[in-house]
Image (cartoon, rainbow, N blue to C red; front, side, top):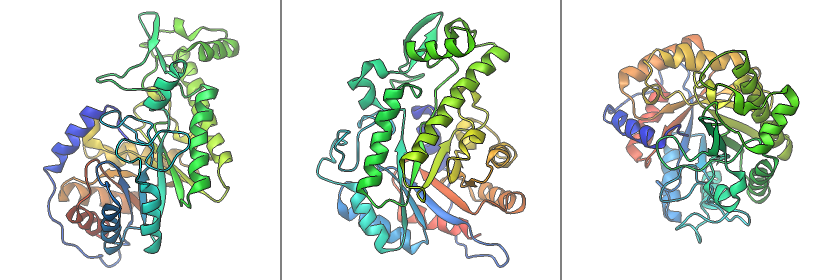
Length: 366
């Protein structure tokens, strides 16, 4: 979910200091928002009892949907790409070799009529990158091509446009859908990190065949028609991959995608190209993390997504540790300006506590 993990974690912790206790009931004439919680596995679940307690709190507070991380997204104590379910393809996350978190969550949540979506990061994948070095995302710097290893810390990406990479990530999606009765998928990390990637041989050759230009010769710091054409090529490639996901799962299965803010054009995401393949667009509207003012939440993050959503629904991902005043303004604008938004996807990077669960439930009913 993060653009720069260390930066995001520090900002989330700082934002948490603003949290206040909320006591609220549904206000007459103001419909409550549906509640989705985005849940990181290693921070919350180490045994089946943890799952059971979490689901009990979710049911108590009216949570309708749990988006559960089933494949590690960030690089840290657990490598990105490791599985929190019984995979025959990807290795298990360390400490979870005997604990199938996804099955435990499905058993507990479905017994309480709570939906479970499998949150599956895609191209931020240390397992794939280290097992297949040729799959690594390649970047250009001063005319030289090298494997991209992160902007501010060591990270592992694979080339989103490589057919072998796509086939591998699709195999994991098919595995989860075939083995588990999940209620949907939430795709994440379907992106690049900047304009100067992917510059692998196959992608360069494909672009040169289409446009007669070796992308390595582009000035990635200079906006203009050439850079826009390169970015369109990449956004088209990502959109084609999302279409492949749509074709790989049952037609009735819901698919959502977490999106970076529209200002980050350089990562190659375009909600307008994803919308026909997904059920839900979930823009990550973490204004504090990105250094934007509060007004940006509705004037840019929501407004831009609504403009490009087409028939797809919108469930903005919102930091669960903001102030009462910030939430009051956000909800006012959502109800007044974006009545099509019915659900808030609440994100907590660390452990969900009963108090935090109760707080977001109260806020959703304001």
